[in-house]
Image 1 (spheres, rainbow, N blue to C red):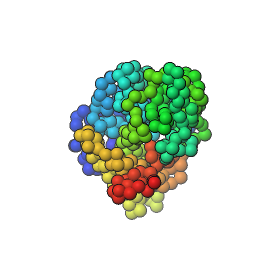
Image 2: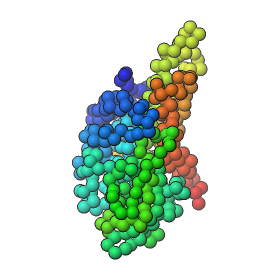
Image 3: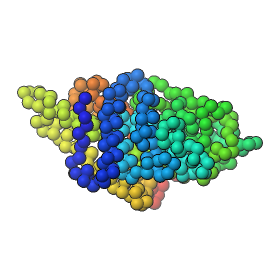
Image 4: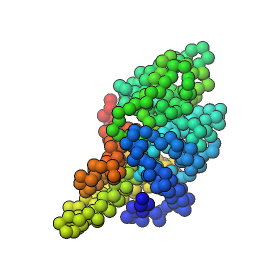
Length: 388
């Protein structure tokens, strides 16, 4: 198997620190050596390669942009580059790391008390424990404010009732961050595996994100101790802060999918002979390849600047929405274009392009649909909400 050579038309490599390049290269090697050889079979079989979890933990890929509690504390640019490499392997692998770091470790880190942090974060960073994030409901995907999951104060703790759906890592999770309304206010709760009244059945029959575990979380008078509320959560804004972290990683991650599709299409076009010459010599094919490279380069520059803003504490959630919206749509277009260049070969899993197309159809929907991000940015620039 050929090692990934990288795509960098604007010499972005020169703008990275030695530490960022080293972190990226370690993750690139991990993907080349341990993800690429197995991911096709896992996608075929609809299974997640669970044996990679401790390896990812050992490489510091969980919550790596957090500091303390065993976390690596790398820059947000280095974190983004790692997400890019993981998604070059498969969106399901990146999703596992994104959920663990941005949607489980981040809320405990940000909204938890010291007892919760010291108990969970060291386990989550190594992969000894796996977590999931329960916000989305069957009837309230893009409208979490109207969630129907409730928490009621009872003797010694809380009773939770409701259902969450499309939950990455849910079935294998040791801890679930579940959002529910307590006296009408959305709060975050820690629900441990094995808790009475809690179950997490896996969802099957997916044609997208097949190498990822997707689950329901079912809460039937689920009783948790009072110590398991995240004390600093206060309304939907707390959950949305977590989503901002995940969306940031996605904006970087999908560039990896785009790059591998572009590279496969470029190599194929140079080697595929039609009419006695490589199809790369045809004007229409060159137009497609140039457009793909152009959009990759734009996405890279957008992500890099976003990472700089995040590292200096100046990033706004609306800027993350712009990057997620642009980069995912661009990656999906690039993957579809690459499929076209490969012709009929593009629909076989001898090449990873069809798998990336299928996965990106999910990525453009989760963590805020393309349309929701459009309205978030629209509200920001006009001052008028189209959601009300």
